[in-house]
Length: 457
Ligand code: UD1
Ligand code: CA
Image (cartoon, rainbow, N blue to C red; front, side, top):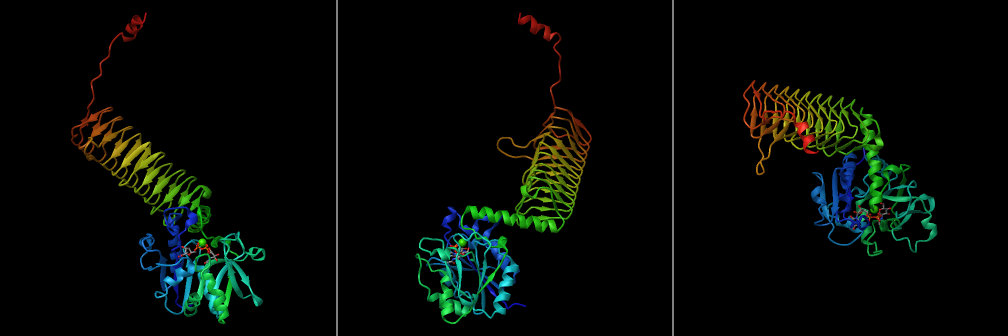
């Protein structure tokens, strides 16, 4: 078992290269703020405490998951200043330092780094790789016998010797330090380009006889640091692949993964198939044995086992067991489609209950309504739920059958087993089992065509 450790996440940088009014670490990767990915990795690696360094008032602290401690960086620029800001929060012992802009770091890499640190009896251990384009990263300069001598920063490459720019091994901003050595060393680090670099601590540690070890990972997929939106795009792509693979391993089929978006917190049951062009967003939860897509978007929605949602758009909606939605349905917040019900083609539903086994198959708008079990609404049945000032409710009873083009002018109550005639505008309640007809009576004008022809001569 590794020793208990504190994880320190640096998340107080200005992130100027993002060109954004949002702090860099709050940018979303697959729907989850970058810094939260790092927090989760630290937590799964078994961190006893997680301390996150933020700028006062930048909004980062407010978005952090429960249990994460906050240290404010009031002064100074640079990663060294960030770590110094957490001095009182970090106790002695091993501290794992993580960068808030490395969302792909994994618990396994943190574990591995800690194990190496202990095995080598190191003072500091750095995670590195030679599998990335090294532009902009700190280059690892190794001394005799392979130990790390120093790190050369290349954010401003002017004046950096060509031999050092040629080094492929880079610092990934993931470290283990003995806290009791780190802080005194940082006190000795001088400013460079107006910043106090954490990486300036390594030569100081070395000079005091400390041992600095680098652990090289061949895994480029965890290595990426996000400094600009191009980096964000690359991280997004890698994270998305990781999410889809996790679901695939758990028994989900993706027909065209490269066109599929599944955000970080989405859950999907086994034997569910996700078709091309589908986006499952936010807190969406899909059950087992479902067929979702092609081309379905769902945000914060729940779908029970065995349901089908084809070519549709759902926001904060709920779909029951075995229900059918789409193609081309739009379910808005507060919609509940109960077990075995159907909401079909070009149908919009808002804040309504569609009862078990009920059908709204074509061209309808159902708003603020309760549709009873086994009811069947004819094509183009519409609830007139808004009178220009207020919304009103519609109640449609069990096993009701509305004719096509029925307008239900709310507030209105159609009793169980009632019918409405095609083309009716229903403005009065229909009693249980009755037929409601509300339309003008037809009259035929004989010889009309002949008259039109006469007139145009
Ligand atoms: C840093 C490393 C570099 C490494 C790279 C890996 C230093 C000096 N350089 O460079 O060797 O290859 O990461 O991605 O450490 N931060 C603060 N407060 C600050 C400044 C930064 O909390 O005042 C945080 C940022 O929010 C970010 C992290 O520290 O999460 C790294 O800062 P950044 O400016 O992106 O460092 P790099 O130039 O990428
Ligand atoms: Ca960075």
